[in-house]
Amino acid sequence: MAAENSKQFWKRSAKLPGSIQPVYGAQHPPLDPQLTKNFIKERSKVNAVPLKNKKASSFHEFARNTSDAWDIGDDEEEDFSSPSFQTLNSKVALATAAQVLENHSKLRVKPERSQSTTSEIPASYKVIKSSSDAQLSRNSSDTCLRNPLHKQQSLPLRPIIPLVARISDQNASGAPPMTVREKTRLEKFRQLLSSHNTDLDELRKYSWPGVPREVRPVTWRLLSGYLPANTERRKLTLQRKREEYFGFIEQYYDSRNEEHHQDTYRQIHIDIPRTNPLIPLFQQPLVQEIFERILFIWAIRHPASGYVQGINDLVTPFFVVFLSEYVEEDVENFDVTNLSQDMLRSIEADSFWCMSKLLDGIQDNYTFAQPGIQKKVKALEELVSRIDEQVHNHFRRYEVEYLQFAFRWMNNLLMRELPLRCTIRLWDTYQSEPEGFSHFHLYVCAAFLIKWRKEILDEEDFQRRMLVDQRVSRDFQGFLKVNWKGLLMLLQNLPTIHWGNEEIGLLLAEAYRLKYMFADAPNHYRR
Image 1 (cartoon, rainbow, N blue to C red):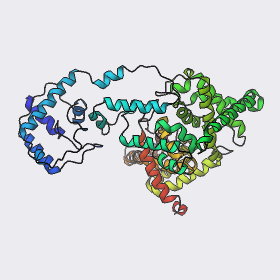
Image 2: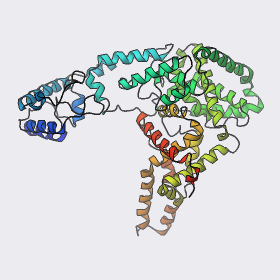
Image 3: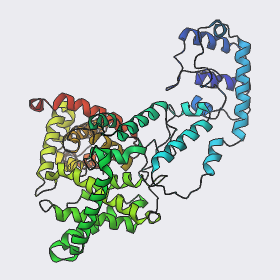
Image 4: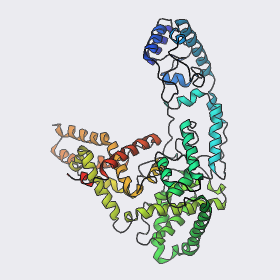
């Protein structure tokens, strides 16, 4: 019976323990299919070794608990077409399988080393001057300690992304060690940023597919136009702009209690606690005071628009990015009272100026009647009618107006639709694109909508089945024809809670394709 169970397991897995498999991301060239076929055929003739423990449910689960199945680092130059490989006999295969299964049984008894290592990490957070060097050295040491197998397995077995309350992207702590490609990109960023005059065009090119966490703060300052490209001028510029911001605080902040500013301040005071309520960082009184100052000063310095609900969301990505420059670990639970007053002042001033630069390009979204948003929603409707007529006609059939769901997409730049970690990755690209927040965002919204076309049309299929059912009353048929609530609830609660860098990368690629097709051909919008 044990032998039969073992045979069924290997039949289901279709892979042999102890052999080198062409996994995603591995450094080996793909195996010769003919050699692999012969190897499996020889192995199938050998009686299976009984399993001592409960069998794994999949090959991935088996491999995840096996530390010696193969060593990726030792045989990069091995020639799989050599005679020694071709003459591999059943005895070798049997011995290898038996050894792996024996070690697998031992590992099932003992906890994995990675778990014990994780439990030894202190829960307290450390404050540092800059996270760049510390993060790089930590990743390097982790890479040396880990078995090469685990590093490669992390590619096909992508780690589970935590829920919406997690801010960090997939290159932060708890994620797999940086690959060689990621380390190379980080080094290229550091070379660009340390050059006497940073080439901003080159920096945008490298930032489009995402900015490494270690250099994101200075990269965002440069791409937003807050910092000059000349390295010698950066320190003086930062000092001057930070002093200027706190000059505004001294000059204007006390006026928040005056009659003509009371309504503005009251609305800000109401909206701040609603900003990312599931993330403990933003519920700290000190953080909320910082946000109130930033938003109030911006509002009174821009009387044409003033404060509009939704602008409060736009502060959070900048605040998190600039906070990460001083915090070694993830920031969602970090107590900002552990930071010095100078650090907090720098984060606050930099967040204010970078948010101001962003809003300068989309201020017509927030002036009276919000004409910028009205135009963008209309452009989105025309674009969708060209790229997916079936979805567009579905909205028309059920009397769903684009303004009913896309207004928030434009007003909040999709921040209510995506986890904050995804927004930060999205803004890497927005700041790399010409008019990213004002123009490229339209194509991201179109790609985002079409991403859910199956779910949208499933609503149509359900209602069509109900309408053709003769048992449905005429009154209920009339109700279904005007029932657009289901669609709106779907579009306002899209399931992106587990999204990460991979999903955002695919979304941006599709948005770029749409921009390439339609941006320079406005007549394509029209029939």
